[in-house]
Amino acid sequence: MFSPDNHLNEEQTEALNRFIAQFDALRESIPAQLEALSNNLSEVEANLHERLQADINHVLSQAEGGIKALGEEIKTFIDNHVVLKDDQPLEPEVRIINNNTSSHAPLVKVREPTPFSGRSSQCHAFFSQLTLVFASNPSRFLNDKNKILYAISYMQRVVFAFMEPYLSKIDSDNPPELLTNFEHFKETITTAFGEINYL
Image (cartoon, rainbow, N blue to C red; front, top):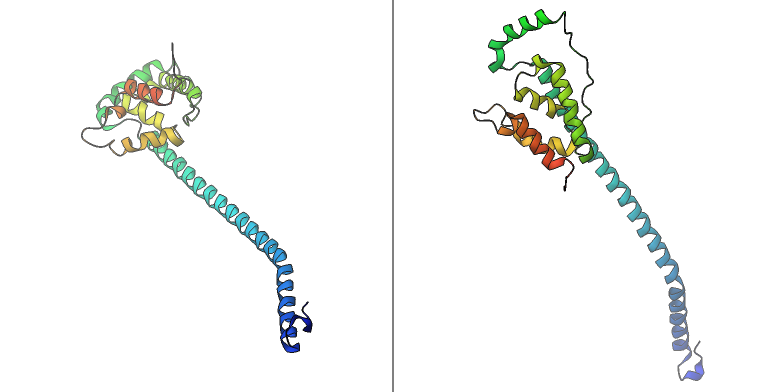
C-alpha cells in the first residue's frame, strides 16, 4: 500500500489504496467467475446436444413411420386388387383351371418375403423368396406388373425411396419399364443394391 512518504497527501493516498484494494479483489474474483462461466457454457452445450439429438431421433422416427405406412398401403392395394384391368378377361378361364386342378394340386403355403431394406447380402435371398411366392400362387401374379408391385410392397428405407419416384407414374399411359418388366426390375435392383461379383 502507498503511504504519505510517496509524496501524496493523505486523501490521495487513501483513495489510491482503496483503488488498489478494489483491483486486488477484482483480480481474485476473476478465476471464480471464469470457472462459473465455463461451467455454464458446458451445461448449455450439453443441453443443446441433447435437444438436437432428440429432434433428430424424432424426425427419423417420423420418416421411417411414413415409409412403413406407405409400404403397408401398397401391400393392401395389391392384396385387394390382385388382378388388374388388363387381366380381367382371363380371370374366368384361370378360375376354371384352378377348380379342375385344386383337388390334385393344392396351393402350397409359403412364407412371405423378408422385407428388403437395401443390405447387399440380403438381395439375392429376397428375390429367391419372391420366386417361391410367385410359383406357389401363379394365378395371383399373372403379369410382371403384379409381381413388381408385390415386390415393392416388401421394400423399405433406401430401396423403397429408390422406387418411390417411379410409383407416381404407375397409372400413366406409358409407365416406365421398371414397373412393367420384372427381369428389368430385378436386374436394376440387383445392380443397385446387390452384392458385387468381381469374377
